[in-house]
Image 1 (tube, protein in one colour):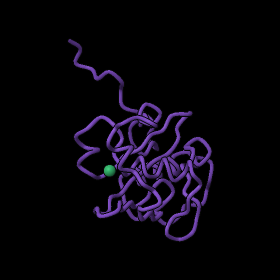
Image 2: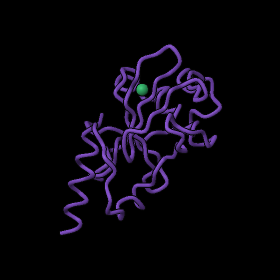
Image 3: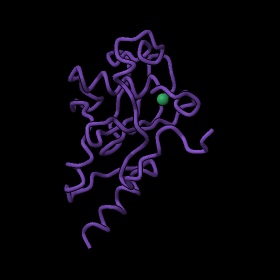
Image 4: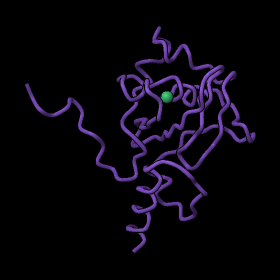
Length: 145
Ligand SMILES: [Zn+2]
């Protein structure tokens, strides 16, 4: 038995999480995908990759999601994401909302940004949470030296 995980963690310092396989879930009977009802959820943008997602009747959770080289990467601070391999309902909510072109609480389109494009943007939006943000900032500063 190998001591290495099947898929190595991303080595991209700016990646806001680990690979997220939405495609395997989409249209499946998977609970987290079924539970994700973006029309009934509160979705608030918290930064470039960040959203605060409150499912109907649930608690608010912080989600980060992006597209890295054609692959979704992300994370969530909920228990389901911590203990299960599949993307949680919060991540699925953002994925669905972006796909459907829904708007967040401020009336801005929910979008899943591409890391490779954003890496070249100089201006930072004010962000408040998540180590991935600090990592992205550091990577940005390194790149500009
Ligand atoms: Zn979650």
